[in-house]
Length: 457
Image (cartoon, rainbow, N blue to C red; front, side, top):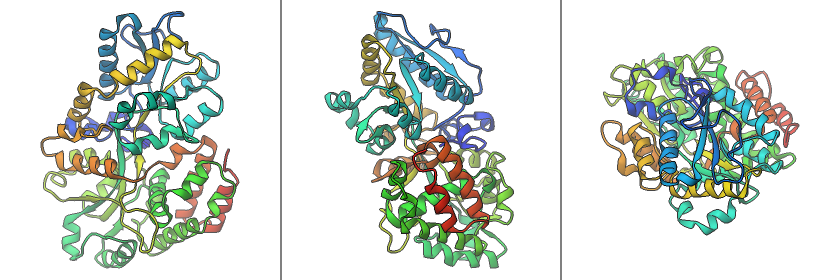
């Protein structure tokens, strides 16, 4: 998942971050796009995937865009300094250019030795086509490498019980936000359950305040509601069935319950009037919350920085409330579960030579998320997926960063964003049907039928 001006897939598009504190910038890290042209790295290749034949030198493609780009470069350079005979040559790409380039290159057998990615559905496609290395035995032989990382980061790195990617970089879960001033004005408390949410809706509407802000035109913003609701109702297994391609997976009764609950909220005027015309890219949804026109919002951790920069004293004055998504009474989902972007992912090409694979594995075990990189992520305001990385947090943003750290590290399940987890065709159908669901133009059963048709595609 990704944001920036809050387009998640442009997540690392830092255009909206000018003027933000380093910490603010960092909370935006997760999936996303750079702003610089395709760039051969220092000492890097000119864009070809392969490293020098017969040597241990490996090639590595990753995204541009600061501050993530500089941190990635520095990690490679430290490795190269320590391993001059098996150096890594990197090439950097803008987000959208990378998605096209990497897919074409891997398909042609000309991809890099080390592949930067988002895990989930994209990784599953690589595995299906025998394009990436099975790293299960590597993690078994290097238990310390695995044990220091958040366990929840491995879900999107795994396919059919085997690990095909090294979880890396940072974590960004979805957060339940509220405006404390608005709650005080209406005289109510933050919701603990779905029933509390529904009870708050008429109270805020009677006060002339929209219960929830939502940039519904972006579609993925609506999706975050379904991700949490399905988890709270039935746990992570129902979506896992759809992710695994099980026929009829969306016919689970919990899915109909989820869809009905959302339409009940829409019909009760739970969302800001005209939400289907509001884009997340404009950050108008965030403004509705920090100006008090809306009381609550479900959105990514990356929005903290933008609200801090643009919301006056909303954040600095302690008016921003935040927590995990409320429980559903009687639901099977663990309330510590969360959704969002559990990490970024590094895979090794199946086409790489044995020497290149050894170099990549040495890079994973000695340099990726070493102490220097962990500190760099913390200094940029991001939460590295390493146990104990919270020791690096300080300053005014430390409470929020600690909340993100605790949410990610304590989650029994950290579900990857559905549109990242599913194959591209199914993801587009998902987003289209979610938009129609929120617009009340299809019934829950029609949603189920439409989604069952694209399972496994």
